[in-house]
Image (cartoon, rainbow, N blue to C red; front, side, top):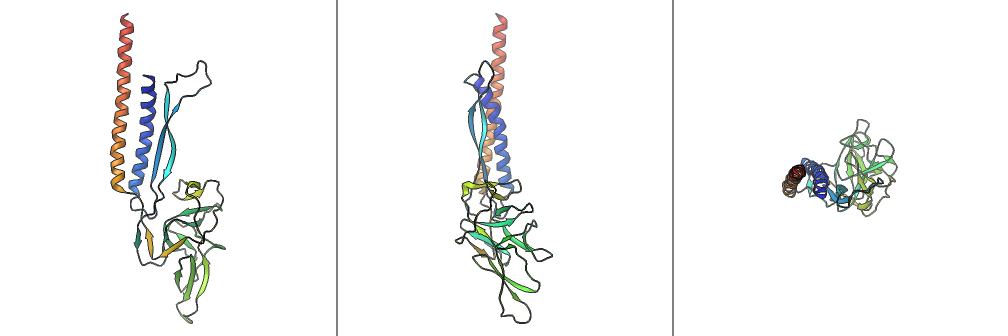
Amino acid sequence: MDRMIYTAMTGASQTMGRLAAVAHNLANVTSTGYRAEEHRLRAVPVQSTNTPAPLSTRAFVVDDSTHTDFTPGEMQYTGRTLDLAVQGSGWIALAMPDGSEAYTRNGSLELSVNGVLQTRAGIPVQGDGGSITIPPDVKISIAKDGTVSVVPESGAQNTVNVVGRIKLTNPEETDLVRGNDGQFRTRGGDPAPADEKTQIASGYLEGSNVNPVDQMVTMISLSRQFEMQVKSLQMADQNDKSATQVISAR
């Protein structure tokens, strides 16, 4: 009965957390560059320094880790110059306000009022020499290696000027951690080195890698697990009441 109570109680609690993760994935089916996440659970025996020691039958279900699916999403053509999609594995580096670096697959960029190349959320893109500033009245082109070039819209229109290069990186997936803001960072917080092999495609955006059908099936399965765990708690309660009645009758 101990195993039933502890496992069902903590299992139901952690299943609710997994349901929340699935709901979050479904809410981001259309989010550009989103990576699906999954919570993995495992059983852990109760440990205590108290005397007597906890019974070996007592175990908790805990959230062991948060797994991220790094499978690339489908590329969608937009024709917009400041829309970028990373081809294959790799990331676009962002210069965060606290001085650190974060990494994203959402390449829907724009220019600030000061001409700084940034995300829709206002976070500057990390360049080889800091943030990248675009002068006014120019045509922008972005090469596969992240080089940002501009051509004046008036005057000598055959003059191509390089204003910077977007930092593209490709750290180990196991070294990446998703932050509360949805951006990824290295586990130690150190900037990842630039990767010359990582390429981007201008005029494209990468869609979310969430499979809505799989997520719906998972949600139904988790809902049934939660119901089963609640019924197990109810059964344990009924067994306890029955046992109490038997003991009281004696």
